[in-house]
Length: 259
Image (cartoon, rainbow, N blue to C red):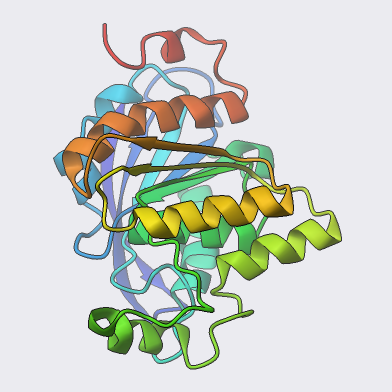
């Protein structure tokens, strides 16, 4: 695998931005792409620094793109930048112009942790025509019809605005909207640690999807909101995505966790 850093100009953000990418050096391209999102306190370098993601995908015919999401929750902020458009237009556009990417729904997947878990769910539900699968580890899967906790209120109001319920930020609304319309949704995977401070949000979103009849995988495991948990569970998420992408029959997925 080749590990690459790229800087490029984002027309949406009107600034230079960065991303890291893992690209197969062998095999016949083009390849599917996995967009892997970081959490609120980190940046685009963190998945490579804190996990063995490069090792886990070493045998897979898969590009991994790790963009910078800043602190914008991967959505168009009410009082701030359009981070949702930036991800869909600029990041995906740059990746598919620059790397040997297939560039079709069946060859795109997205996932992340915490803020990035919300970002993956929101982006996939807002653009179900773009992704075949999406996963969330320990996601900030807020029910925007509920009051924000006091320590989060100022930050989240700047992001979501005063009328967040039923908006393009609202994953509960987006899931219900597409269920009513009969939209073909991406395959969804959600997991969270039993002692994670976001477990109640994850349980609530899971219950909402169950009530709607939206197919998804949901699991709770021992653990808290930390890299020990995410390093352990990214392997299962990769297996989920490789199956959705149709790569699971290859030798790479058999050796994903070791060898």
